[in-house]
Image (cartoon, rainbow, N blue to C red; front, side, top):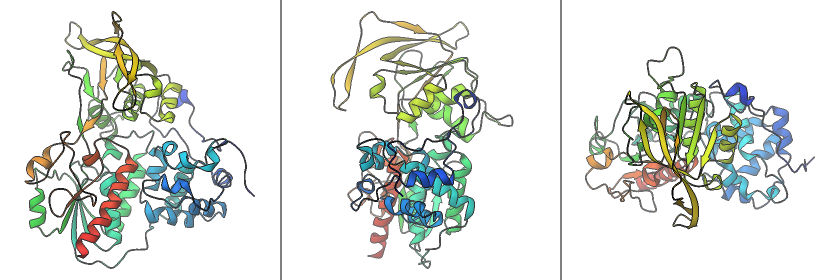
Length: 461
């Protein structure tokens, strides 16, 4: 029986007053009953536009039909056939601008909650069938190296392993998962979930080497000498950007990258952590993306009394997901939009004691299609803060480029690839943030997926 409700089944979540002080997951997930009820809102379109809206082309109506039939295992197998990270993408993917934006049910109400259903199925499967993939081909003895264990690397490695390749992942950090472990906070993506995805890779026969900084420990050329027939570079964009304003080198100023890595990877919020993290009373996070929301919400959970998000455009122009902005506001984070920092001020102890800002107004649209922020004359004011976190985007680390002859990048330091995801070096493929600059988890997964298919073609010649 179709459920013609115009609205999604609401997502159960922790109360804002409670969750603002803990690192446990904010959204709690659907029950079986809620999942079936939501699945019944799907019209099962013959030419499903939602699938075209997905960077990894999940067969959405097919998996939802299985939920309607209460065949959760079957639903999972359909998702896993194109997406090895359903538990992750079900949580952090911007569904509202992808699959769900194309859903016919969204014309006269809310679209089907495709992301919530994907999360439900993937969580259910892990709880009930942790071993999983059965569709592995015989090993073919051909070795492929994957640099980086973030979403691009993991997706690429999964598809290559499925096709019988002997895959080794080289990860620079001591923990596997890339941005999924150092960037995205526990309350949005529990690290145990990333762990389960990695365990599954090992189960598929993928070898994982940590503390392997490619370009330092080994070069790409040395990987070829060691018998790898192709290399996929999915090393991300981990180099933070700064504004270049006075006072940016003061104690108490850091990148969102550093702040989030200390918090998420090093678990600085726990009693037993070895990593110091700054204890702040009032924090300004500069920027308006998901990373800015993550940093602001971490600062609150780490005990700050006041947390401000300072952004030079209006709230409508903020790149962060609507859900992230909504959760941040519910938790008590204050948005200072149409404000731009011009100087960070030091107290007598040489640490940050405030941030000078000017008010902005929006003019004509610029190259990005968003209205250009313009300073309002004589509108300076001082924000009382003791910590400033810069969340202005990131670019790829130049290490691999600078140690690999013939590997070309654009002026932003991103690797240049052709339509087959191959770089300017024969046999070296790349994808994800290392190619696009900072983007989304799901786009990196899409790139890893395409690269795996192209590497397979290249190696079968």
